[in-house]
Image (cartoon, rainbow, N blue to C red):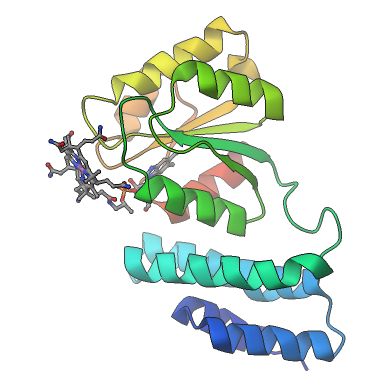
Length: 210
Ligand code: B12
Protein backbone atom coordinates (compact mmCIF):
# COMPACT_ATOMS: atom_id res chain seq x y z
CA UNK A 1 0.00 0.00 0.00
CA UNK A 2 1.37 3.41 -0.96
CA UNK A 3 1.93 5.43 2.18
CA UNK A 4 0.96 8.97 1.21
CA UNK A 5 1.07 10.11 4.85
CA UNK A 6 4.76 9.10 5.08
CA UNK A 7 5.44 10.93 1.79
CA UNK A 8 3.83 14.06 3.22
CA UNK A 9 5.99 13.77 6.34
CA UNK A 10 9.17 13.26 4.28
CA UNK A 11 8.32 16.32 2.19
CA UNK A 12 7.77 18.45 5.29
CA UNK A 13 11.09 17.18 6.69
CA UNK A 14 12.76 17.91 3.34
CA UNK A 15 14.11 14.36 3.25
CA UNK A 16 14.69 13.82 -0.46
CA UNK A 17 16.12 10.31 -0.12
CA UNK A 18 13.20 9.07 2.00
CA UNK A 19 10.63 10.70 -0.29
CA UNK A 20 12.28 9.29 -3.41
CA UNK A 21 12.29 5.78 -1.87
CA UNK A 22 8.65 6.05 -0.83
CA UNK A 23 7.67 7.31 -4.29
CA UNK A 24 9.66 4.53 -5.94
CA UNK A 25 8.02 1.80 -3.80
CA UNK A 26 4.60 3.24 -4.64
CA UNK A 27 5.48 3.19 -8.37
CA UNK A 28 6.68 -0.42 -8.01
CA UNK A 29 3.30 -1.31 -6.51
CA UNK A 30 1.62 0.16 -9.57
CA UNK A 31 0.50 3.51 -8.12
CA UNK A 32 0.45 6.17 -10.87
CA UNK A 33 2.90 9.09 -10.88
CA UNK A 34 -0.12 11.42 -11.00
CA UNK A 35 -1.53 9.97 -7.77
CA UNK A 36 1.87 10.31 -6.05
CA UNK A 37 2.09 13.91 -7.26
CA UNK A 38 -1.37 14.79 -5.99
CA UNK A 39 -1.72 12.76 -2.78
CA UNK A 40 1.90 12.79 -1.64
CA UNK A 41 3.63 15.88 -3.02
CA UNK A 42 0.94 18.51 -3.59
CA UNK A 43 -0.91 17.51 -0.41
CA UNK A 44 2.39 17.84 1.48
CA UNK A 45 3.13 21.23 -0.04
CA UNK A 46 -0.33 22.50 0.98
CA UNK A 47 0.59 21.66 4.57
CA UNK A 48 4.00 23.35 4.19
CA UNK A 49 2.14 26.49 3.01
CA UNK A 50 -0.19 26.35 6.02
CA UNK A 51 2.72 25.83 8.41
CA UNK A 52 4.57 28.76 6.87
CA UNK A 53 1.56 31.02 7.39
CA UNK A 54 1.23 29.83 10.98
CA UNK A 55 4.99 30.41 11.49
CA UNK A 56 5.48 26.72 12.34
CA UNK A 57 7.95 26.52 9.46
CA UNK A 58 10.49 29.14 8.43
CA UNK A 59 12.16 30.15 5.14
CA UNK A 60 15.10 27.69 5.19
CA UNK A 61 12.77 24.75 5.96
CA UNK A 62 10.24 25.82 3.34
CA UNK A 63 13.03 26.18 0.76
CA UNK A 64 14.28 22.70 1.68
CA UNK A 65 10.78 21.21 1.18
CA UNK A 66 10.33 23.10 -2.11
CA UNK A 67 13.71 21.83 -3.38
CA UNK A 68 12.87 18.28 -2.27
CA UNK A 69 9.57 18.48 -4.11
CA UNK A 70 11.22 19.81 -7.30
CA UNK A 71 13.80 17.00 -7.22
CA UNK A 72 11.18 14.28 -6.82
CA UNK A 73 8.95 15.85 -9.49
CA UNK A 74 11.96 15.70 -11.83
CA UNK A 75 12.21 11.95 -11.29
CA UNK A 76 8.45 11.52 -11.80
CA UNK A 77 8.27 13.77 -14.87
CA UNK A 78 9.02 11.12 -17.51
CA UNK A 79 6.13 9.07 -16.06
CA UNK A 80 3.63 11.90 -15.96
CA UNK A 81 1.22 12.25 -18.83
CA UNK A 82 0.82 15.58 -20.60
CA UNK A 83 -1.49 17.69 -18.44
CA UNK A 84 -0.74 15.90 -15.15
CA UNK A 85 1.36 18.86 -14.07
CA UNK A 86 0.33 22.42 -14.63
CA UNK A 87 -2.85 23.62 -16.27
CA UNK A 88 -4.21 25.23 -13.07
CA UNK A 89 -3.30 28.59 -14.59
CA UNK A 90 -0.35 30.30 -16.28
CA UNK A 91 1.68 32.61 -14.08
CA UNK A 92 4.32 35.15 -15.04
CA UNK A 93 6.49 36.17 -12.09
CA UNK A 94 9.36 38.59 -11.71
CA UNK A 95 10.98 41.23 -9.53
CA UNK A 96 10.33 44.73 -10.84
CA UNK A 97 12.85 46.92 -12.64
CA UNK A 98 15.66 48.30 -10.48
CA UNK A 99 15.31 45.56 -7.86
CA UNK A 100 17.72 42.63 -7.67
CA UNK A 101 16.17 40.75 -4.73
CA UNK A 102 14.92 37.41 -5.96
CA UNK A 103 15.04 34.89 -3.10
CA UNK A 104 11.44 35.44 -1.92
CA UNK A 105 10.15 35.71 -5.48
CA UNK A 106 11.82 32.38 -6.34
CA UNK A 107 10.25 30.80 -3.28
CA UNK A 108 6.81 32.01 -4.39
CA UNK A 109 7.54 30.64 -7.90
CA UNK A 110 8.54 27.25 -6.48
CA UNK A 111 5.46 27.02 -4.27
CA UNK A 112 3.19 27.96 -7.18
CA UNK A 113 4.85 25.33 -9.37
CA UNK A 114 4.42 22.78 -6.61
CA UNK A 115 0.73 23.65 -6.48
CA UNK A 116 0.41 22.85 -10.19
CA UNK A 117 0.68 26.30 -11.77
CA UNK A 118 2.51 26.73 -15.06
CA UNK A 119 5.13 29.26 -13.93
CA UNK A 120 7.34 31.49 -16.11
CA UNK A 121 9.97 33.09 -13.90
CA UNK A 122 11.43 36.17 -15.61
CA UNK A 123 14.05 36.78 -12.92
CA UNK A 124 14.87 40.10 -11.28
CA UNK A 125 15.15 43.70 -12.58
CA UNK A 126 12.37 43.10 -15.12
CA UNK A 127 11.19 46.20 -17.05
CA UNK A 128 7.43 46.76 -17.52
CA UNK A 129 7.53 46.14 -21.29
CA UNK A 130 9.14 42.74 -20.73
CA UNK A 131 6.25 41.73 -18.44
CA UNK A 132 3.77 42.96 -21.07
CA UNK A 133 5.55 41.06 -23.86
CA UNK A 134 5.63 37.78 -21.89
CA UNK A 135 1.98 38.04 -20.79
CA UNK A 136 1.01 38.42 -24.46
CA UNK A 137 3.30 35.64 -25.59
CA UNK A 138 2.32 33.08 -22.93
CA UNK A 139 -1.34 34.19 -22.69
CA UNK A 140 -0.85 34.31 -18.93
CA UNK A 141 -3.68 34.38 -16.38
CA UNK A 142 -1.77 35.82 -13.42
CA UNK A 143 1.09 38.30 -13.08
CA UNK A 144 3.12 38.18 -9.84
CA UNK A 145 5.26 41.21 -9.06
CA UNK A 146 7.86 41.29 -6.31
CA UNK A 147 9.66 44.30 -4.79
CA UNK A 148 11.92 44.42 -1.73
CA UNK A 149 12.91 48.07 -1.82
CA UNK A 150 10.73 51.03 -0.94
CA UNK A 151 12.38 52.77 -3.91
CA UNK A 152 11.20 50.10 -6.38
CA UNK A 153 7.65 49.70 -5.06
CA UNK A 154 6.38 52.51 -7.39
CA UNK A 155 7.64 50.38 -10.31
CA UNK A 156 4.78 47.98 -9.52
CA UNK A 157 2.33 50.76 -10.31
CA UNK A 158 4.29 51.64 -13.47
CA UNK A 159 4.09 48.00 -14.54
CA UNK A 160 0.32 47.89 -13.94
CA UNK A 161 -0.04 51.12 -15.97
CA UNK A 162 1.95 49.53 -18.81
CA UNK A 163 -0.49 46.61 -18.76
CA UNK A 164 -3.42 49.00 -18.98
CA UNK A 165 -1.80 50.88 -21.88
CA UNK A 166 -1.31 47.66 -23.79
CA UNK A 167 -4.96 46.69 -23.28
CA UNK A 168 -4.07 43.63 -21.19
CA UNK A 169 -5.14 44.80 -17.73
CA UNK A 170 -8.55 43.05 -17.86
CA UNK A 171 -7.04 39.80 -19.10
CA UNK A 172 -4.65 39.17 -16.24
CA UNK A 173 -4.91 39.19 -12.43
CA UNK A 174 -2.07 41.03 -10.72
CA UNK A 175 -0.64 39.83 -7.40
CA UNK A 176 1.99 41.83 -5.54
CA UNK A 177 4.31 41.02 -2.65
CA UNK A 178 7.68 41.53 -1.01
CA UNK A 179 8.64 42.64 2.50
CA UNK A 180 7.75 46.38 2.22
CA UNK A 181 4.51 45.78 0.28
CA UNK A 182 1.18 45.92 2.14
CA UNK A 183 -2.47 45.27 1.37
CA UNK A 184 -3.06 49.04 1.48
CA UNK A 185 -0.35 49.63 -1.09
CA UNK A 186 -1.75 46.85 -3.29
CA UNK A 187 -5.18 48.53 -3.15
CA UNK A 188 -3.69 51.95 -3.92
CA UNK A 189 -1.96 50.76 -7.09
CA UNK A 190 -4.95 48.74 -8.30
CA UNK A 191 -3.48 45.23 -7.87
CA UNK A 192 -5.93 42.32 -7.57
CA UNK A 193 -4.26 40.83 -4.53
CA UNK A 194 -1.45 40.88 -1.99
CA UNK A 195 0.04 38.04 0.02
CA UNK A 196 2.68 38.29 2.72
CA UNK A 197 4.37 34.93 2.13
CA UNK A 198 4.70 32.09 -0.35
CA UNK A 199 2.09 29.92 1.38
CA UNK A 200 -0.63 32.56 1.26
CA UNK A 201 0.50 33.54 -2.26
CA UNK A 202 -0.42 30.03 -3.44
CA UNK A 203 -3.85 30.26 -1.79
CA UNK A 204 -4.42 33.67 -3.34
CA UNK A 205 -3.37 32.48 -6.80
CA UNK A 206 -5.80 29.57 -6.53
CA UNK A 207 -8.61 31.94 -5.52
CA UNK A 208 -7.80 34.42 -8.32
CA UNK A 209 -7.67 31.72 -10.99
CA UNK A 210 -11.15 30.40 -10.23
C1 B12 B 1 19.43 39.19 0.63
C2 B12 B 1 19.31 40.68 0.54
C3 B12 B 1 20.00 41.34 -0.48
C4 B12 B 1 20.76 40.60 -1.56
C5 B12 B 1 19.75 40.05 -2.59
C6 B12 B 1 20.19 38.71 -3.17
C7 B12 B 1 19.09 38.06 -3.93
N1 B12 B 1 19.50 37.26 -4.88
O1 B12 B 1 17.90 38.23 -3.67
C8 B12 B 1 21.68 41.74 -2.13
C9 B12 B 1 23.00 41.68 -1.40
C10 B12 B 1 21.95 41.69 -3.62
C11 B12 B 1 20.93 42.98 -1.68
C12 B12 B 1 21.15 44.21 -2.24
C13 B12 B 1 20.56 45.38 -1.79
N2 B12 B 1 19.77 45.52 -0.71
CO1 B12 B 1 18.99 43.99 0.22
N3 B12 B 1 18.39 42.72 1.45
C14 B12 B 1 18.51 41.42 1.49
C15 B12 B 1 17.83 40.89 2.76
C16 B12 B 1 18.91 40.65 3.79
C17 B12 B 1 17.02 39.60 2.64
C18 B12 B 1 15.94 39.60 1.56
C19 B12 B 1 15.42 38.19 1.43
O2 B12 B 1 15.84 37.45 0.55
N4 B12 B 1 14.51 37.76 2.34
C20 B12 B 1 14.01 36.39 2.40
C21 B12 B 1 12.81 36.21 1.47
C22 B12 B 1 12.33 34.75 1.51
O3 B12 B 1 11.78 37.04 1.93
P1 B12 B 1 11.02 38.08 0.99
O4 B12 B 1 11.89 38.50 -0.09
O5 B12 B 1 10.36 39.09 1.84
O6 B12 B 1 9.89 37.19 0.30
C23 B12 B 1 8.75 36.68 0.97
C24 B12 B 1 7.55 37.63 1.00
O7 B12 B 1 7.90 38.99 0.97
C25 B12 B 1 6.69 37.19 -0.14
N5 B12 B 1 6.93 37.69 -1.48
C26 B12 B 1 8.06 38.09 -2.08
N6 B12 B 1 7.83 38.41 -3.35
C27 B12 B 1 6.54 38.21 -3.59
C28 B12 B 1 5.77 38.38 -4.74
C29 B12 B 1 4.42 38.10 -4.71
C30 B12 B 1 3.59 38.29 -5.92
C31 B12 B 1 3.82 37.66 -3.49
C32 B12 B 1 2.36 37.41 -3.45
C33 B12 B 1 4.58 37.47 -2.34
C34 B12 B 1 5.93 37.74 -2.41
O8 B12 B 1 6.89 35.79 -0.17
C35 B12 B 1 8.27 35.52 0.11
C36 B12 B 1 8.39 34.17 0.74
O9 B12 B 1 7.65 34.06 1.92
C37 B12 B 1 16.90 42.09 3.13
C38 B12 B 1 16.56 42.23 4.61
C39 B12 B 1 15.36 41.46 5.01
N7 B12 B 1 15.40 40.87 6.14
O10 B12 B 1 14.38 41.41 4.27
C40 B12 B 1 17.70 43.28 2.60
C41 B12 B 1 16.96 44.54 2.18
C42 B12 B 1 15.70 44.21 1.41
N8 B12 B 1 17.92 45.17 1.28
C43 B12 B 1 17.97 46.47 1.41
C44 B12 B 1 18.83 47.32 0.67
C45 B12 B 1 18.82 48.79 1.08
C46 B12 B 1 19.63 46.84 -0.37
C47 B12 B 1 20.57 47.66 -1.27
C48 B12 B 1 20.02 49.02 -1.73
C49 B12 B 1 21.88 47.82 -0.50
C50 B12 B 1 22.91 48.72 -1.17
N9 B12 B 1 23.08 49.87 -0.58
O11 B12 B 1 23.44 48.35 -2.19
C51 B12 B 1 20.83 46.71 -2.45
C52 B12 B 1 19.83 46.93 -3.59
C53 B12 B 1 20.17 46.16 -4.81
C54 B12 B 1 19.02 46.22 -5.78
N10 B12 B 1 19.07 47.12 -6.75
O12 B12 B 1 18.08 45.46 -5.65
C55 B12 B 1 16.99 46.96 2.47
C56 B12 B 1 15.76 47.63 1.86
C57 B12 B 1 15.34 48.86 2.63
C58 B12 B 1 14.14 49.47 2.03
N11 B12 B 1 13.18 49.77 2.88
O13 B12 B 1 14.02 49.72 0.88
C59 B12 B 1 16.74 45.65 3.29
C60 B12 B 1 15.34 45.59 3.95
C61 B12 B 1 17.84 45.60 4.38
C62 B12 B 1 17.72 46.70 5.39
N12 B12 B 1 17.15 46.40 6.54
O14 B12 B 1 18.14 47.80 5.17
N13 B12 B 1 20.07 42.69 -0.67
